[in-house]
Length: 155
Length: 287
Image: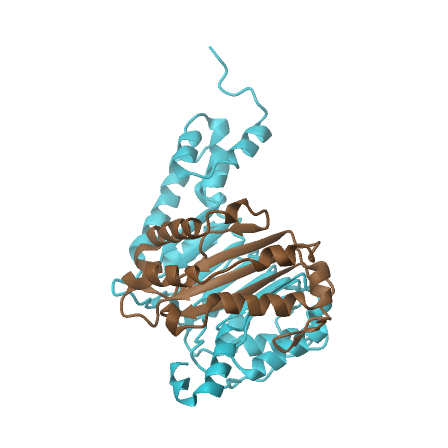
């Protein structure tokens, strides 16, 4: 499949494109929300079916916002994040790796901003989220393509 | 007696730049005079101040005291090293971020902004600023980020007035500027165009533009795609909330896409909204 579109946008004009950031937002409980995994897969397959992007892209960043706005209590956030992460399956990375010679890095950035947690105990939450990601995917740091950053914070 | 430092100062400074923890840097600054400047350059490069009169006054007091006590060593003054400044509301106790009023004419704020000679980046977060163009931002500022900043009239003219004062600006970020307003907004003012007296000429030199969850997104997308478009733009981050945003972005990519080295796309809410609209119109109240 050779496409030049990504969610309705023509990508064939982006002849200098080296990096892309895709924001994916999730609200509330994993069962009430779209699957994080299917959203990532959908984006990746669309993006990498565009020849120009496949040829040029060096860094792809996923900024994943896990919001608790649909929950009754901020204390549910770790459980919600955990639920989303459990659904995540990153097998596609190895499949795409071979056909993407230019891709050097896939970055993952996690955000739980717009929730009470960011303000009330930002540091503590950041650390527990990091630990959760590492516990859920202990092998990820060994895959050269993956880099985990700290959570980024807006408000 | 052993000489304290026999290394060239440039090497010492370079080494100090690799230290990130504050207690170590504070200790380094006390080793000897030749380490003071380099330590402070790292230690004070980024300052975050909570926007309440007490915190602002405390920082002013600190700047004044160090100026007096180190009168014979002006280059080491902390205020000479602040390159990044963040001013934000205090965290809320009830879990909701409430914008805090920031008086742009506050003497403390004026003092701080006038003393930070090498300030390059300013971030204002979750603040109500009644007369934002009157903020005395140093004209050498290169990067400005407004996150959840409420202005008096909430029109684009206020932001344009502010930008006109910043000839060196290269990076602009506007995030969460009344983003919940889904009513199409092309308020009162007319669209400026390059060459008229209203268009801020520095927009033509922007290299980075980030417009996320802002009602000004569409307005700025239209501005930078005007003829002649902002050809210096290399990095673009956009949140798409409505069909018209997508149309504007498509046009922008046609005009400027060839120059972009980075594109950030936030279409989550737009796609989810469309999906819900198709599946169940009754759920639309969620957005």
